[in-house]
Length: 228
Image (cartoon, one colour):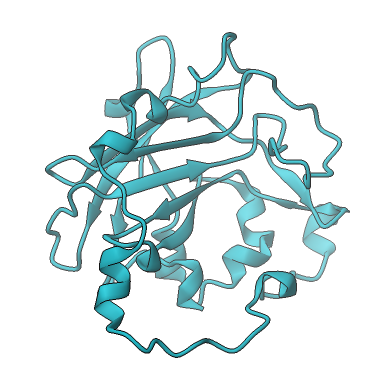
């Protein structure tokens, strides 16, 4: 038994209280559909193809294991969701985010910001090139670390439809000790958050490939933060 196995499992993640709404929701006096139709939207003119390669956003090469992450975004019937804005953000190879609120004393990488985006194509496919993120300690408790993961955001057809979720990596021993993973109610739902190693997505001599599909609704839907 390792020291980590001797620790009690962390409670399921309940979210950060400061991020929860501090005021009751407001009633919409106008047509809710009209609100969505006039809200922020994204299209091909807003996204550069280079935005999906997180390793090419700075003059130098980022540190870490290069990976590709690709998959399809579909509805419950397997139909492709086209033109979907997919955003990705993550920690660097040392497990630190390029964000002023990240207090983890791991080094920052001047050649890696950790954010990218793309639009799904006609078959609902997306693809990113990035580096594998490192694990990092949770809330300063050095014995409990978050497993390596990628954050994903899918915007739908209007800003109010945004979904946020995470992709984990197969075989990570930290996954069983992660409070956010423990907040996923069903083992099958958690399995759907784990990407699969796919040699077909490898870039020879450069990057390993992982496949991760996203289902937006239905019984096999990908778990999102709003699913709690």
